[in-house]
Amino acid sequence: MVKRKVGNPLAFAVLGSLGERSMHPYEISTMLKSRGKDGSIKLNYGSLYSVVTALEKAGFIEAVETVREGNRPERTVYAITEAGRAEFADWLTELLGSPEKEYSQLEAGLAYVPAFHPDRVVELLEQRIVALDAQIAELTAAHEFMRSKEFPRIFWIESEFRVELLTAERNYAERLAGEIRTDGLEGSAFWRKTHELVAELGITPSDVLKNPVKYLGVDFPWLKEVTPEAL
Image: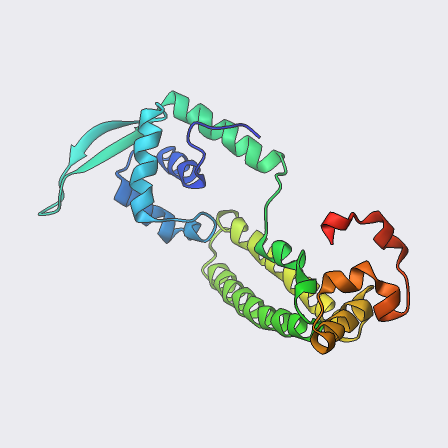
């Protein structure tokens, strides 16, 4: 991935907005919110000004005038430069065409599920499913509303993509919870028994892994591939 002078995703949104017309930061913020873009790009009004300053310093945008509306403070209007248009085009090309590793919080949690008892993990996954169902329902209702107003789908496909991701996550969480609940997940029985031994004998999971024959009466060939430090 290209290392950009201003790499904040909000900078991408600012460039895209100014590519339509010149605006002051408050107008940009209002446009992004009214179009629901704050659902795809984290929008913080305080950081918006920092991003605008950084973009101006990088030569991607420039101040073109100062305006005053009624008794409100003066506001600086910015326009995108040719360098800014080129940066936006290159950035959009990268975002659409080049996959990038994204570090999901759920993925990070799944990497350490053995730290909890299987029943607790099932409980938490079911809790997550309820929350995901609510998010999916909210977005789906918003999509139905936009369809009823004949709002072109091209303007909310990022929200549609969000629903696809949430649905995939929800379905995986449901399937995984079911497999753990019934010990259908490979390794679940070992995982469950380890937690029982830890609670009963006051030992650590590492103790069980280091001597599975002693504690479980079986050996695990895959443990030979694990370094002692990893245990």
